[in-house]
Length: 514
Image (tube, rainbow, N blue to C red; front, side):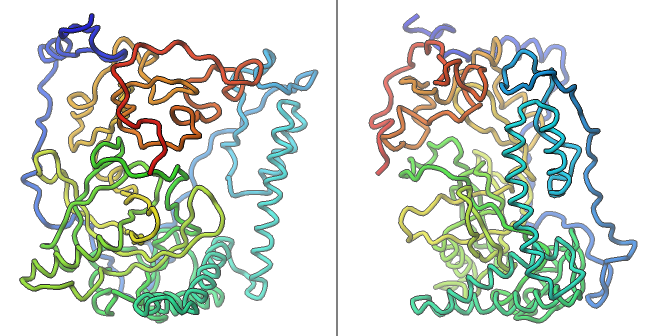
């Protein structure tokens, strides 16, 4: 069918659910009504009770705090040793359910992991994989032993503290180098000097065993002075303490950032940004400063990036400070930055050494398509990115959405993420695909020249070296199941013929980004 509104005019994988929805309404109770955002106020989300103990009392060893229990691990799985070694993943003798993971072992227990590799090698099932794995584990163990040896002057330190000291030492080195750079702005140097004073004091406390790494507990620091004993983090308490110590600079919350490094962003192609609202992972979030909640603004973010923390531009922070000043009936910038949480070492998927970034406390919410708030305001840590740099990365939303709202997607060929504040949205917002997901349209195909128009138009332009789309990863995407996602001869597995295109691709699609 070339026209009209028949089912054939829709792309493969789509199906009208009108009749099914009508049938459901006859037999199912009414859906919970969407909305309710207008009733959400301006106050921050309930943060729970304030910590009971005073700042000079530690929660360690008290009935008010229990260290988190290690995760439950399944029983070990074993497989019979074959008479002849199995060296090929698709060998018909491969035991059903075999896998190379060790879920019964602590992934950080390198000694146990190495012993298990020896046992797996003796098991004669893909032994070459475990030979390579053992070499990598031995390299990690050597790095760990070097890390421990570096702190031999402070006996009795836990491995967690030693790992934390290793990160702090690297941050200290980076900050010292930045302070020696003559081109650095004085305001930035003041920020770095504040971090450095706290890092030096915190490392001394760890090495003297006056401080321990206690998951779930934090300590507050200001310009190298410890303000409290280990206690649970409470946002409202943090704001008060931060304000009392002029915490827009030189303030640090030890124990809040990850033990090692935070993930800043997965590796991706550097491309020109698409038009606003056209990228499938675009979301809009409303931000405001904790010390002036009347000044706010909505910014566009990239969602689902794998980042551990929100990231915005320096210019965004300047604009929020300007909005805060205007909300106070004055001009110019608000004189204070938001409350400082400290600093953390960040890494990307490219690996390598981390880079130090300051963490700030900011408040965030999200509005629906009608402009009503979808949930209560809440705080989140964020970092700043220089938007004047060459091709800065997009703003990153971090994990906030996954903790505050429902999210769902469907294999409908669009890659769109649906976000809603009521569970019923999974029925009313997320489309159902008929007859089944096996025939759902793909976002891209390996070496294919066709992709659904609604997807083709939403992805950023790619470098010309990439053939008409993104190269499929091994073992992922529309590849035949033939061992690591490749065909019998080692080349790309054949693909089924694509369905007819929905229309011509958008102008310039598949070309290099500017």
